[in-house]
Structure formats: C-alpha cells, structure tokens
Length: 131
Image (cartoon, helix red, strand yellow):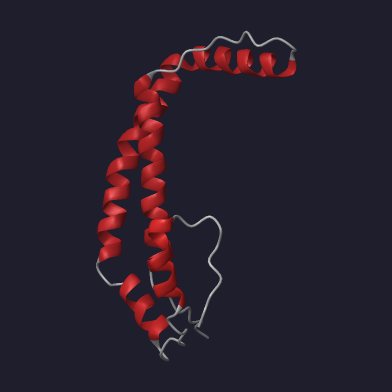
C-alpha cells in the first residue's frame, strides 16, 4: 500500500506516518464503548468531585458576595465606564479589577468544570412513578 504523504509533514515524521498509514482499520469489538463508559462513570469518584467543587466554589462565592456588598459602587462605576467606552468612538475607559477578585472568579470557574464533569459522568437515574 502506498499512501499519499501530506505535504506539511516534516521529513522526520514521514516514517511514522507511513507506519501508521499502513495499519489496516479495524472495527472496535462489541461492547467496547459501554466498557469505557462504565469506567468513566465509576462509582465513588463523583462524590469527591462534588466535595472539591463545593470547597472551591463556596468560599469564592462568599468572597465575591462580600466584594460586591462592600465595593458595589466601584463595580457599577467600572461597568458604566466600559459600556460608555463600548458605545463611544474613543477608547479611554478606566476601571480597576482586584487580583483576589479575579482569582475568586477563576476558582468558581474551575469548580464549575469539576461539578459539570461530575454531573455528566454520573450514571443516569431511573425515574419511576408511583400510582
């Protein structure tokens, strides 16, 4: 089998490309996908993910609520500056963002990703109705 070599492959990569291109494709065995998904949706891991997500998010959300309650006027002034600059032709907006606030937002984002993975990886629950 002689496969066409893409033009953007470096000379050092050509042998690897030829080796991989000569491997015939094979269908995955039956049940392979289900076995992988069972491992991904393993039992006790979701509990720890929810605990870690809560440990990251709750203090950060409390800090952000405190920042908003104590410095809310500065936040609204900065938001007004940004909106005024976005609608004007000049680019002279001024606002200050505290590094701790940015860090708290990052932690909330990371916690959201962990919680989303825990929610996706959880096995589906069967709903039953009672009569």
